[in-house]
Length: 311
Image 1 (cartoon, rainbow, N blue to C red):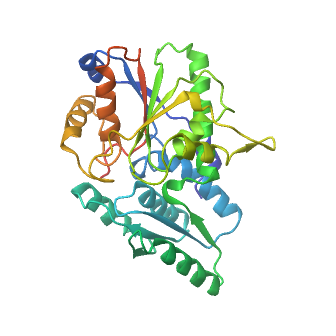
Image 2 (image 1 turned 90 degrees about the horizontal axis):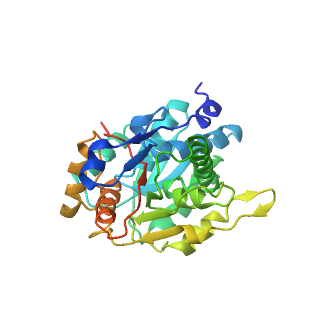
Image 3 (image 1 turned 180 degrees about the vertical axis):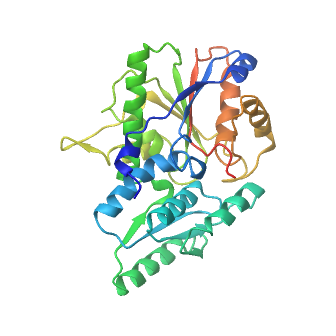
């Protein structure tokens, strides 16, 4: 049996990107969230899922029902780990541009999913309610996992990740000298966890790159998610002054491959870091733009939360 408790204690390394830094004339570090066990299957999703699967096992759920796009890292990682642990995973899949990258993820996810429903956004709620109703009729105890793994436990995972980084900075005296964190903002769980005030206040501000044009937008949604964490019976409040979010890199649609992101993909490849076209290529482009500002950061830490090469 996989030791989930041991995995929860696993820390991910911080690496300096020498070539990227030299070209941008700006020090760039990355937090390697792809360096977990199952590292080829989902980056940040694995950190979240370690917490979530522990809860599923402890409470004897029969199966998992989740939601994501065809090219969802979350669906892929959930199905893969579920298969390893013997827990069936089914998904409701939503449309996105069917790029070669998304096709490969979809093809891979089908190997591990017990079943899946192809839906559109109009019918999503109906499909979800119907599926849960049928499970109840079959007397199955189903764990509903929201998109991106962003429930209370998923957010807690990144609250703990923030504490991990805070401890690192305290020990190093921030010798790395980064004064800005950059992360992607899909369903918001990473950002909400990192901004939670239970973390030592030594973490630098966050620049969150929105990758999904949904109803969740900026600080209001992140504040809502942050309040899902209850520490010592007190609902936590968001340090909103430490967050800037941007929609400038959304592109044509969620998951679209944007020509203007190719510069970032090629740049980070010089340090053997793969920026996937759905998420991190957008963050890479934002970092390039930050490096061109007159008052640019002293250094940037990128939360590398996608798989580093999927196959």
